[in-house]
Length: 465
Ligand code: FAD
Ligand code: NAI
Image (cartoon, rainbow, N blue to C red):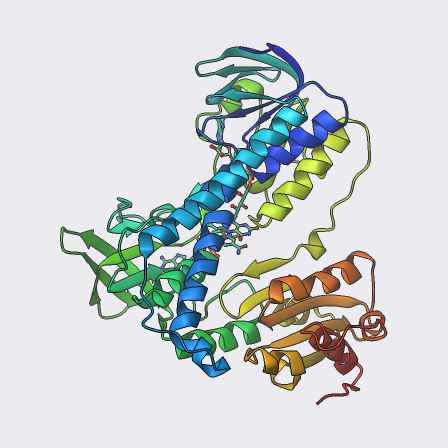
C-alpha cells in the first residue's frame, strides 16, 4: 500500500484517466490512478484502438501481398496466412503500449492502485485489495462497455463483441456483423481480408450513419467492391449459437417476413454504453443523465463537489483523443487554469482501406441547421501521388460558410485520410477559412494536395480538375 491520502485520484487508466493522472502530476499534485484491469491503458490500449489497428495493419499487408503487389511489378510466391504470428504482432503491440503507460506513471511518480474503486463518500474511495483512500479531487474516467441486443448472448466464442473478434483463433468462413458502424467495418475488414465472407446487417438505411451521407454511400460501394455485403434497413431479432455456428433471424427494420442466416461467427457491434457499474455513485451524490452517462457541466464537474468525470462515461463522441483532451483539461481546471476544448473540431477516423475521416458538420447537419454553405470537392483520381500509389478511390470534401468562407466541416475518403484531415482540424481550431487552406503551400507530390484542391474548389477554382 502506497499512500492513503492524495490531492488527485483518477478512477480508470484508459486514455482519459492516464492522461489526466500524468497532467495532474506534472502540475504538482500528489496523484494516484485506480485501475482494476491487470494492465494500464483502458479499453483503447488493451482491447480497442491499438489491437484493432495492429490487426488492420497486418491484414492489409496480407491482402496486399495476395492481390495488389503484382500490380506494382512485385511478384511473390504463394502467400500464406500465419494467424498465430499475426496475433503475436497484436499482443506485442499492446504490451509495448501498456508498458509505456506504466513507465510514464513511474516517471511522474503516480501510484497505480490496483483494484476496483467504489465511493464511500465524495472524498473517499474503497478499493478492492487496497483499502480506503482519500483525495481532495476525484476524477471518474471509467469509460464504456459493449452494448448488447436483447435476447442475444455474447459468449465471446461464436457470438462475439469486438473483444472476442480481436482474438479469433481461426478465420471464419462466414461472419455476420450486426451494426454497420466503426467497429463493424474495421473488424469486418480484418476478417474479410483474411478470407471470411462478411455480411453486415445494419438497422438504418446506411452505414456510418452519423457521418456525411455522400461518404456513407461511396464507402459502401468501395467496401462492396472489396467483397463485403450489406443488408441495410434490417434488424436482427434473434441469434442462437450451437457447436456448429450461429443461426440468425433477421427481418426488415420496418417489420416483415423473417429470414434466417447461418454464420460461423457473429460480431455484435451496435455501439457502446457508458460504464459506471459498481462505482457507488449515490454515496458521493454523483448523478447520471437520461442516457446513463455521468452528468457534468462544461468544466467536467459532476453534481458532487470535487468529483469530476471525463471520457466515454460522459457525453460526447466515444473517442480516445476526446478522452485524452478532456484528461488534460480537467487536471488544468483543478489547478485553476482555463483550458478549452473545441467540440466542433474533434476528428474521427475509420481505419478501413481507404480510410474515412471527418471533422465538423456534415452537409445534412448544415441543411438541418439552415446554414448556407459552399462545397469544394476533389477526387483522388486527379491526384498524382494517389495514382502513383494505386490509391485513387475517394475524395476530399470541404464545407465552408457561404458568407464568411470559414471552414465548417471536412469529409475525406482516401488512403491516409486520418492523417490528411489534421490540417483541416487545425484550420478549424484557428477559425480558418477555405481560402486560408487554399493559399497555404502544400508539398508536391502528396495526397495533401487534394485537400488544397478541395479548398480551391470551394471558390470554384481547382487547378487539376
Ligand atoms: P476506457 O479506455 O474505457 O478506460 C476505462 C478504464 O476504467 C478501464 O480500464 C476499466 O477497467 C477502468 N475501470 C472502470 N471502472 C473501474 C472501477 N470502478 N475501478 C477501477 N477501474 C475501473 N477510439 C479512437 O479514438 N480511435 C480508435 O481507433 C478506436 N478504436 C476502437 C476500437 C475498438 C474495438 C473499441 C472497442 C474502441 C475503440 N475506440 C477508438 C474507442 C476508445 O477505445 C475509447 O473512446 C477510449 O478508450 C475511452 O477512454 P476512457 O479513458 O474514457 O475509458
Ligand atoms: P457505432 O455507433 O459506430 O455503430 C453501431 C451501428 O449499429 C449503428 O450504425 C447502428 O445503427 C447499428 N445498430 C444499432 N442497433 C442495431 C440493430 N439492432 N441491428 C442492426 N444494427 C444496429 O458503434 P460501434 O461500431 O459499436 O462502436 C462503438 C464506439 O466505439 C463508437 O462510438 C466509436 O466512437 C468507438 N470506436 C471508434 C473507432 C475509431 O475511432 N476508429 C473504432 C472503433 C470504435
